[in-house]
Length: 335
Image (cartoon, rainbow, N blue to C red; front, side):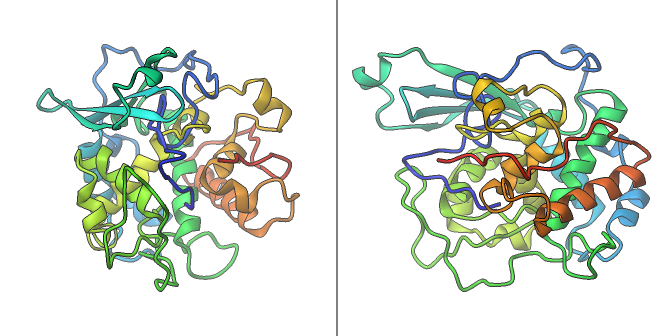
């Protein structure tokens, strides 16, 4: 995952701020699939969707760092968090974080220009990301399809083995080259001297801006991961939380991968003109579009992700008959 967050462009959680489209920028459809559960139903643990034996069979060569227990604990703990994101003007944000287990609500980010008169001239845009919806929001089949897509990306990002067997996911804890710092200008999430923000964890979280925003949502404090980026490669629960956070949280101009795979996101006129359609291919555009999308059908890394997705679908006993798996003719998002 290589998207960069700076003071100029910020990744916005689910409805408005971290990884994808929200009500103002991308005109996501608000309709939910017919299989969605009602709001009154309690969110269940993702452990009801996949067993430890299944997880181990999906990732037979995985590093022991990536355990089933860590994945389930990460999903359950992060599932107790929801973030309300409000965008004011073009790029002035407020994040309100709620811990559903305690009912505690706190403002974990409010940009310095929040109360400026110029920033108040246009109506605010607001959305909420509920991390408890990861893999639990809809029918068992829809949830498994989402999980297969999520697993496909984290497997590809961490693969280290034999091509085309799709058994080599979750092997790398960090990217091979750790000499690069991955630092970008950011007023909200400035880098800490001496720290490197290279790709770590299942989704290869990169750049100080992404570490800071992930930390804000996960911990309620940007400094936790800005000061200690190594947590994403030394604590498996934090590593999986960072991956789930990325999956669930939209950016300013992109929808979340969760919304794409569960059918909530629908393309607006601009998206349609640029070839962006619902399906697995759109999640590739979200994760690494500038590198892999709009480059034809022979792009190796794109096809490797598709291969993992189809492999995991089969392993989980489901199909995606209408899969729009390719992003070969899909224009990537520009910041």
